[in-house]
Amino acid sequence: MPPVATRNMPGEPDIAAYRAAISHFATGVTVVTASSADGPAGLTANAVCSLSLEPLLMIVCLDLGSRTLQVVRRARRLAVNVLARDQQELAASFASKAPEAEKFRGVGWRELDGAPVLDGVVAWLVGEVRELLPGGDHVIGVAEVSSVGAPGGEPLVYYRGGYHSLAS
Ligand SMILES: Cc1cc2nc3c(=O)[nH]c(=O)nc-3n(C[C@H](O)[C@H](O)[C@H](O)COP(=O)(O)O)c2cc1C
Image (cartoon, rainbow, N blue to C red; front, side, top):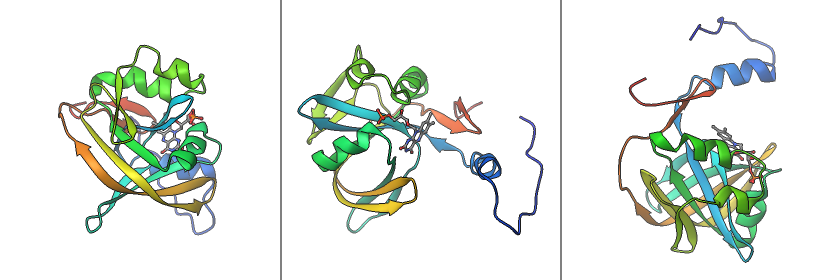
């Protein structure tokens, strides 16, 4: 991949420059899920990180326009599903605006500790939403982790706008 030209930006960087720079921060790929009376909801998210050990807190940043945020606001519980390398199709599907029922069609999942956990993930973390803080066009969700699992396997990686494996 060609390098992005180095630019000194004493002024305000524009959105394209910001995205190009932050895209070098390689991340895993997760599907953040929550439950509602109408069924499960979920979106692909990489703005996820660990926050605290005492208490156990994680951060999930959710777009104000996402339907999943509406479900998280009501459920006050969510699951972070860390995708495996062979789950790229799931990442694409959960990043879409397809109806929620369609996103989950053919996808194995089970409710664990009050949130939907997807089959085949390398790890999952379920937590109770403690805070939904303002963060520009996103909401910074802080969740207290109440159960986790780590079946393991190779994770899916997101880097410079594309999906990768650790080896690639
Ligand atoms: C690799 C990747 C990472 C993403 N990360 C986030 C994220 O951290 N937070 C977020 O709100 N949306 C993120 N999105 C966008 C959502 O997945 C997308 O807006 C989705 O359509 C929202 O679905 P919903 O409206 O059904 O909740 C990401 C998309 C991709 C492809």
